[in-house]
Image (cartoon, rainbow, N blue to C red):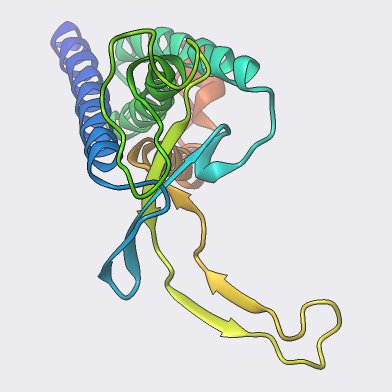
Length: 217
C-alpha cells in the first residue's frame, strides 16, 4: 500500500510540473509572437495582458547577475526534483505539501527555459513589430542570457495620495502593479501554501521523521 501511494505521489508531482511548464510556455510563446513589447490588452478593468520582459527574478525584480541567477534557478530545480523523490517515499507526507513543492519546481524551470533559450530562438524587434522564431543561434541574445516574458497584470485599484503627505503626496498608488507570468504565480502559490500550512514540515521531511501531532499537517 505504501509503495502504491509513493508511486501515485511521484506521478502526481511530475504531472503538476509538466502541466505548469507546458501552460507557462504556451502562454509565453503566444504573447511573444502575437503582441509587441509593451502592448497592453484590457480583459477586465482589473485584469490586463501586458507584454513586458525582464532580466530578473519573479515579478520583474532584478537582484543578481543574469548568469548567476540562471544557474541558481537550475540548482534550485535540481534540488527540488531530488526533494520530491525523497518526499514521495514518505507515506506520512501530505499530498498538498508535495504539490506545493512541485509548483515551485515547475515555476523555477519555466523561467529557466526563457533565460537559457529565448535569446537564441527569438528575435526582439522594436514595437509595433512582434517577435518571431529564428534559426537557433540567430536570436537577440546568447545562451543563458534570454529575457523572461511576463504578461499577467492585475491593477486592482489605484488612488492618489493627498498632497499634504510628505514625500508621496500627489503620487498615484496602484495595487497590484507588478507584471508576472504563470511560472511566477506557481512559485508564489507553492510558497504561500508552505508558509501558511507546512512551515514546520520541511525539517522533518529532510530527516525522514514524521512530525509530532501538534505540528501542522
